[in-house]
Length: 489
Ligand code: GLN
Image (cartoon, rainbow, N blue to C red; front, side, top):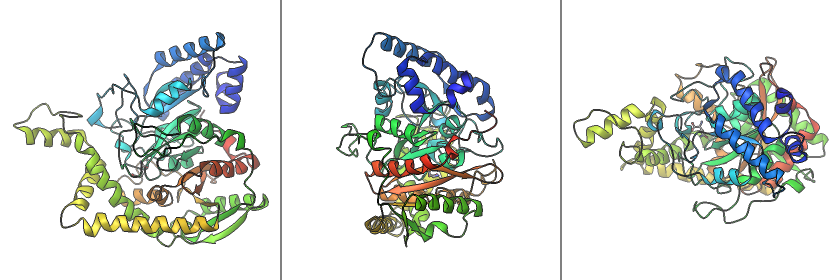
């Protein structure tokens, strides 16, 4: 029963919960059992709140028995990337720096999950401060891909992606600064939605690149992701970058196909470096849309080849500023021994941060330093604008843009750890959406011969999540890639 329960979709689970066919407690217990059975091999969770989750579930069951109105996710367990503040529960950001940090407050998305009567299962592993594409940069553990335990799950939301793919949680939250929801979703065979910039409040998200960061849902299907998105989206006065509009109502529209549908296919998304099996699966997916009546249109994003370079200036510049607060006084690890204040800050930061985070702080500090800011940071901002202009022009001709989410399927653990540039290139197709503030999603669209998942990326104009999800759902209704499960589960 336990495994059949977690094989069900979010919509089925919500129906069973509403009808009383299952209880939140039994569903939570099923997830905890899956974690007990699988997570010593997968290592998706940094912290599991066994008692707390069961207690929340019982409270929700009791509320339902009393006939009170229930929240939109009532009884559904959700795993949370450990970069989101959870009151009274550890929030490490995958860093030694915050190993002992317990926030005194909840992020807005966590509060909204509680209001929606979701059950918070625990915190998932990530690359340190969300910097990475493989989850190997975590200070604590390497998460494995449930489809092949020798491979990475993608990153930085690799723990959330692996947890959902393995059936340890029906839903998870991730964050996406340059691809960290979509790329691991693609590599783990699940759905990951990066909402438009400003759509989901980031109050209580530990900041990485503040002009790029977004929080979004990860689920096994589009409908599940849409449910979670609806619960967390919408204006929040506590985040000054939050768009002053209520959460869009999507669910009643989700099953309506977008007609007519014009799909922009950028030639830059099928360039050298794209794995042949990934390309074939994505082209097959485009044919599915054509069968459904869509028109595919060649579009060009001429500045796309500069996206990775631009991103690694903007993101690192912002990170160098955001991470200045970890000095052993305001926040973070403090060295045990030091001579004076400067020595204390140097030692604390030296001990607390891992190699990739240090690399980024140095790169960003350099790009912002006097004498170089014009040549690097300010130049990058200009290219960012050109990238955005390319998308504005494309969306003048098409409803959505499609291509691969990642250039390759999941790579082997250790394969790219000593080659930062190769690692950075795994976000080549996802990064520009963050630079341009777009909405983007990755959905399962096939498998390689070695049985590794492949993701289709769909991008839409800022705040066009409703259209994006409807288009994604059109594909899901026609195909069954999202129903495949890794054999180890
Ligand atoms: N892999 C990219 C990076 O390392 C994106 C990370 C993210 O989206 N958080 O910055």
